[in-house]
Image 1 (cartoon, rainbow, N blue to C red):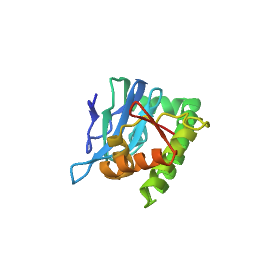
Image 2 (spheres, helix red, strand yellow):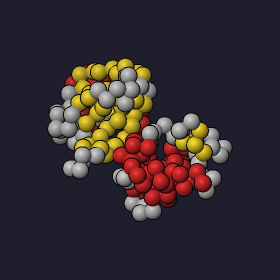
Image 3 (spheres, rainbow, N blue to C red):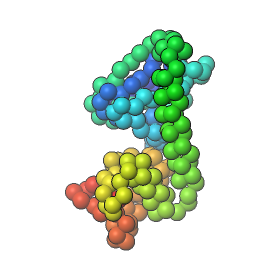
Image 4 (tube, rainbow, N blue to C red):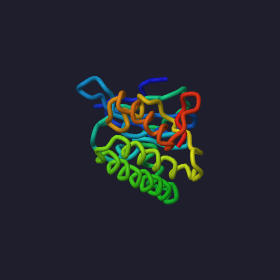
Length: 179
């Protein structure tokens, strides 16, 4: 857990595919907090698009739990993509889906009201995982991680989640948030 896979400023040399676990792409802020840009889970790849540019990683990749990750040299991955059309289309589809949700998250971050910001995040996550019944989706993040994802202070997240529970917008069961 919290094992660094690669660091901000390193040159991309590998394609990474998560066999088991989850990985967050983060940036350390000047005030000592962490910004989480995205979280990839079992079956997903991460940071692969940078293999097609001459840029360094603008973030860190950190394992959120014990992970099994396939690591393929970047040149071999690019050769494979050039030679096969179907995997390239799959990669385009995956990235289109990911970009869609990133744009939704950018919109979410532009919301000033903390309750609306968290509600929108929870709604998007619930929709992504096709959960529709009230309180059927367990938010998979700690309050600290929610703070890092939403750019809200930890205290604000804690207070807001308590208000949401009081307003019957979420349920808290054994410390876990259900939306």
